[in-house]
Amino acid sequence: MCRHLAFLGPPAPLAEVLVEPPHALYEQSWAPRRQSHGTVNADGFGIGWYAQDDPVPARDRRAGPIWADPGFTDLARVVRSGALLAAVRDATAPSADGEAAAAPFAAGPWLFSHNGAVTGWPGSVARLAAALPAEELLALEARNDSALVWALLLHRLRAGDKLGQALADTVHDVAGAAAAPESRLNLLLTDGAAIAATAWGDTLWHLHEPGRRAVVASEPYDDDPRWREVPDRTLLVATRADVTLTPLKEPPS
View 1: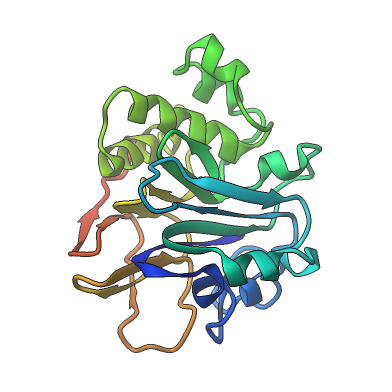
View 2: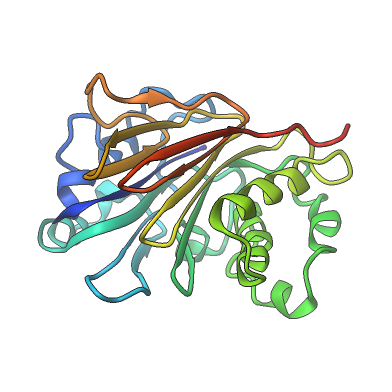
């Protein structure tokens, strides 16, 4: 239903990561190679990136396809960053929220994207929303499943959970039998220093050069043999130094 990517590495033009590779996220918007659900990601896109010495990321999001935005390639050519998260969207259901429904979602130092779908949506809203205070529900950026998953995750992050723990517990809660079992929850999160992701129902890959760069993506953007597929039901946490994979427990049935 979407393709997304997070990158940590030496500062480089955004285009070097998102446009120039032979199977870049830009191309994945119309020709993904490993997408199991949907075929074209034309319902919006977004890029979030970190500037040097600024912990709060900048974002650029649009409601239409990435290839139809005349300013995107110029932006990607001149903006440099050593940490970014980007996504192209194939909406599960029609939405009137425009660019507000496009990842990455953001708050404080965090950027977030969801590749997948919450089953039973929108009927599952009440069960999932019960875990959130009313003011956080009223602050939802869009009326879609990804925005609600982000709110659940953000609630944990603001309570002090680390990136990986917050992702794992959010997946467990959403996919539980009392909420939305059979959901696809490939979640991607970064704070500019680390990347956390879950493989839960769709493809996830990582490329790591210790001490230099870490890339986590729905699918490889080139044919480098160092890409490794992340097993389903797995939590990944990556920094420039290392990558850790941890199996995720199935929620109670």
